Length: 268
Image (cartoon, rainbow, N blue to C red):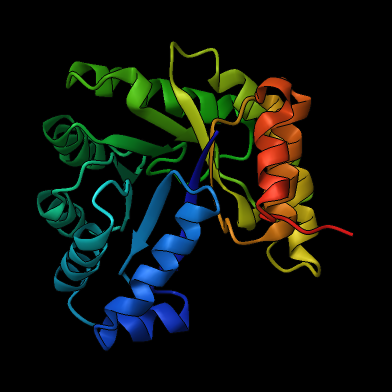
């Protein structure tokens, strides 16, 4: 299970201010905390600084790799040029993940060749020019299209992470089941993997951490391979460790015990 730490995101006011003020120590603190909490990738989103996104993403990645050379980076932007800039900037020893493409042909044609060139993994959203489908079957069809086009460009299918797109249950209560059904269908596509932006499920609800953590355990059982989440959320972190132990993904519950002893979660 890959954890993509979501905290270095310019939608968060403290991160936005740190980027604007070039506060390297704050960015590094966020990076180190997430890695210590189990993040496999650090999501970097500079799209909402209201500045020059290319310069901002260049600075953030340079800061992280200057002190944490093995950090794996998830480049999170709707801007093709920002993604390309980040791929060129990264000189670390970790992995790269592009977040994200859709089933739109123009986007696939731009970003998949970049992924192949830089040996990057790709988050593929199961939506296209017609929008976000409501059913698991429609999501599967879009995924098939993305998969075939990506293979034509020479992308290793194991580098594709399909995101069936969680929608808030506060407004669309049936979508949690559709998402879980989508995971099962997507896992039938060769050796692709699955990912989600976890916190979307609880948008608009109280006690969001509770909803997020319960849904995470259900999604792992259904075949989820990676999640974009806050690794510093103790309830989510504890649920992740417990779910992996219960599903036989943690030999002799060793990682669960290790996390408990390291006080990565503190439940009473």
